[in-house]
Every structure is written in C-alpha cells, then in structure tokens.
Image (cartoon, helix red, strand yellow):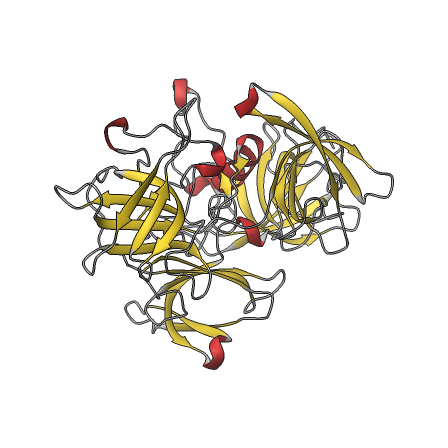
Length: 445
C-alpha cells in the first residue's frame, strides 16, 4: 500500500461516518466509479436525514487500481504542493517488509524501482522512531514480515528511521463498497464462472509478448458478493463483468468479498450528468414492479411526500450494492429517478441502491469492560443539535476488529478510540465488524 492510500485511510477513519446503506460509510463514496451530483434538479427536494440520503450517482466505469507498485524515493517526482502551498512529505522508501530482527530494531525492506531492478534496504529502528500501524488485527501492531511500509529517515541519515508507517492486510467485508477505505486486491474482468457459482476466473489481458494471465478465485460460504451497475435480473456472476476482489487474510485465491460491476448505464456523459428529478425510498410496488411509490425526503416541518413513478419497457434501470438475485425493485431500496421528457411520473432512467440491513455504529469509545467483551460508545447526533447519547456494544469471539493509526501495542480496545462498524443483522447490541482508530497522533515508540 502506498503512502497516499495510508494517509487516505487515516483521514477517512478520523472524519468519516457510517451510512446505513449498501454503500457502507458516509465518507466520499469511492466505488472507484465516476460520480455525479446527487441533489435533485434545481433544488426541487430538500436533503433528508443521513439514513435517507442517497449515495452519489455512479456509473461503474472507472477501474480501481489493479496493482500498487512501490518505488525508491529517488524515482519519484518532486513533492507536490498541497492546499495553501504546503508541501507533502513523501517517504524516502516504500515497500514490503521481508525481514524483522528478533529485537525489532532492524527491518529489511524490499523496494521496487522504475529504473532499476528490485532491491533491499536495511532500516534501523531506534527508541525515537515513531511507528504507526493500520489495517491490523488485535495484538498485531508490531513490525511484521509482509506488512507494507513507508519510511521517513532521520535528517542526514541513510538508514535510521524517524517515522515508519506500517500496514497489514486486515480489512472488513462490510466496508468493501468504499474502495478508498479498503481497496480490492484484484480488479479484473471475469473470463469464466465455476459450476454452481463456487468461484470465478479472472483474466489479465496480454500485452506485447506477454500472454494473458488467468487467476482462479474460490468462493466459500462466507464470501460476501455484491453487484453494482447491473440491469434488472442481472445480479449474478457473469462473464464480462468486472470483478473487484478482496481476499481472505493470508490467502491468494479465496475471496472474502467480491463486487461485480456491470455496464447497465452505458458510457457516462462527459462532465457532470443531469441531476436526478426525484430521489427517495421505495415504499410501494405495483404491476410487477413497474409502478413505484417513492417517499421523498421530508421538508423541514412537513411530512414526507409520496409520488408514483412509472417504469416502461424503455426505462433504463441500474442496480447498485445489491446481493444475488436482488436486481429488481424492492421496498426499502433507495432510488434516483430521471423523468422522461415532458412527463411528471414516467421514468426515462432509474438507479436503485440496496441499503445495508445491519445497524451501524459510529462514535467514540468511552468505557471498555475489564474482559474486553463490552464497549460503551458515545455518539453525537448532529441532527438533534449535537445531543450525545451512549450505547452498550457487545464484542464476541466472532466480532472482527481492525485497527488503524495506532502505535506499537495499540491494536486493542482502548478508551478514546473512534469506532465505526456494523452490528450483527437483527441485533441491537452485538458487533459483527468494527474499525477502531486513534484520531490523535500515536505516541512515540
């Protein structure tokens, strides 16, 4: 993972929020797709509460990075200028940790160069070196072979680190629709589907003298599968779809989660497309899903309005964040509607989004029980004038915990950490997946 992604993860976890929808987190939604403005045309509708807002418009065309290469600092361009003319501080070395001394005082880092063959550099860790860990599980905030690393050296030193950012490989399946938070390991077209849908084969196109490369991916009962930008009845594994794959920890071929991306919306328009005429939640269906009752976000002080939207054989439909066989109108889906020219109720194009049925968690840890089985989380409700409430959350052996921006030994439930994640479907208090981050700068090692 390169430094830009590490910084993005840290920033997102500090300022992002959970959105209870198929899109995962209420941060700039990065489905690796181009976006359009989601507000309704000419300000026809007021914005609703967070749980009723729609994810940004997506076209599913842009591809996520297929690989992340790391380069020695001498190959990089001069530091870019940030806002206000502030210079970014790129690391001197970025690469993969291939060896850690027993005392943790020295790392061997494998780096790749644009102009030279891959090589190794030796990095010394002192008591003054600041170590920061992300994408790690409990008790994993320590230098470890296989982690990605970004290294800033002490002034005038060739091998002594002033600061090291290390990233493990832990991700949360529930966050996969936010690709800035958890980029997929593979993004390639599907060339074959296994019998019974138990896996797929991805194909990297050949180039020049290099032949095409095929990669088989295996599914298990735990693999989470989603579909985006697919037509009605198109939520199934299909040759030609693009597959974005998150692998199980320490696996090269077993999928933790997969998002298939189709092309239901065709080629996106240049620049920003037209704004949706209607946006809301589907609360009624009639005529085999050809007539929708859509509840619009309420205007302050008024009850939510409802409108009927008609779909015809020429209406272009696309579905996002849906599960297998979920590409059809369903009560509870969020929807954006572009009306046919001259009509107030007939849709030329509709875009459906499946909300996540699980309840979300987003707040700051106030109390951790002595045995680590319970958290007291404080949440500030911005919709109620900043009113703070507390919630008791159960942590079980099945709860997946991933830590970001923590210091050595900091991958543990800790008071003051920010926590985001999801509860077990149907539960009011039991956590399924939690991401915990330290918003302050971790203390020196």
